[in-house]
Length: 304
Image (cartoon, rainbow, N blue to C red; front, side, top):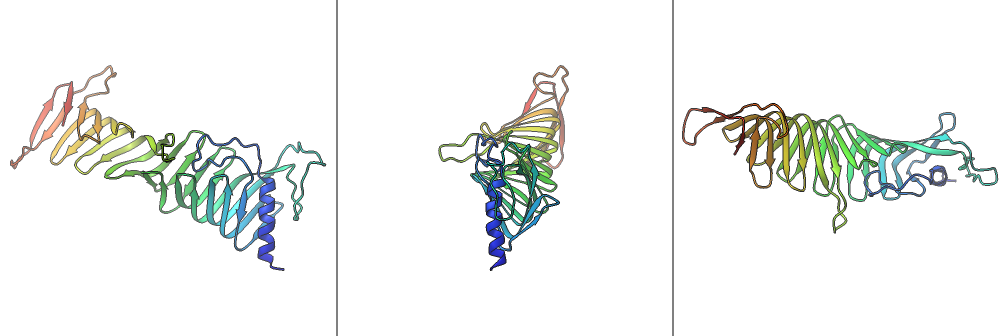
């Protein structure tokens, strides 16, 4: 008998029986928008079942699929636990390997090596990944962390997270969001996804950026402590120690609105509803001149 073939068949059947069928379906089929139904796992090198540790290990081009979510990796580790055992002895279903679906459930899947997580409209990449079924969250770590949606690409150095219940992705560590020539970078980026369009494609509705925020286009560079970008209006709002740079000219203030579509930037000393007003400063270098001309603007608005 082919041992690898036997283990694979046992794994497919066992995973389908152990996966709880009562998980709520996703509101939108994203990376963890797995929907309901059984979990199916495939592997080329077979299955190791560790009863004492309550886990299965699938090795060799392993793949776990539930609904429209698929996790690819060199190795998949499925953790299961005992449940309350509501199913009676007459309702329990046994597999060839002795597992019972009436009192166990898989609650976490760890992916190791060449991890690729594919949803209906998004794909994420990393070296290691964890799919927490209870929290409906996927966390990726390792090198070349990348999250690709309809038109956006988000990268990070520390970790990438996708939260289905909140329909958002979190990139940590020199995080960067790219769309065409637009680039938003920060220590942490949180991207919120919108509804699918007429082509059934979902994109990012809003990006919140925290700490060391940098926004750049082909002609302009902006920096601040915190930022919020609206993908529909293509307007970015920056807060705290804001600097706008275009060519040799620089504007400094406490709040800015940067329209990445029209190229118009507005600078203020503070956000519109702030009680305290600060002055806006500009450092301008007239065209054709060899020296810089500092200029201080009043506490109202500045634009370039």
